[in-house]
Image 1 (cartoon, rainbow, N blue to C red):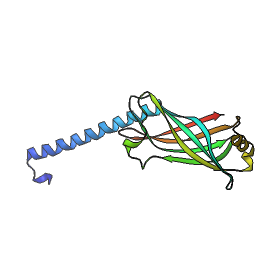
Image 2: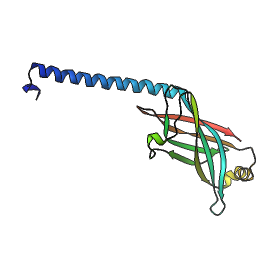
Image 3: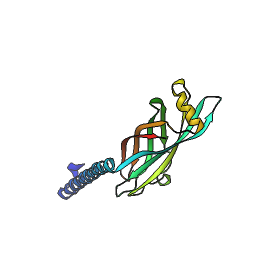
Image 4: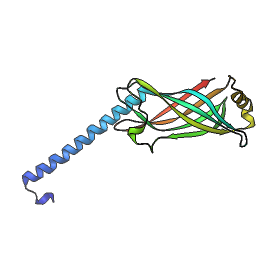
Length: 172
């Protein structure tokens, strides 16, 4: 097709191609800069862990984990997914996934610029003899248990999804 165009047509096609490449490069550079900014200025901490219910028949406990997302950027961000591993007093009790990908972007909890938001997620784990002491403290509402939660969260901006690793320890 390019061979059948006149000189002016060829210049238009070449100009459009160069413009498209420049737009692509500008978008890519913006995404790279945004990724660095988010990795430096967004962080996740565990705000609280509360016992929500105990299923005595199946020896399972559900706790509500409050993930606090801090946003020190100039942009509004949202969270699309958190994958995490939970240890209770040094014993691994399981993995959890909080996914908001099925929620439209406008329906997700925004984390405003220079602010923070707590997103709760229910985590269920089974009783075992290795955590019997910690389990008993949680059931009785006593203090003295240590939670360690480590994982990756997908932070979304208007232009990109950025995986952010986090780890936090909470002694209650």
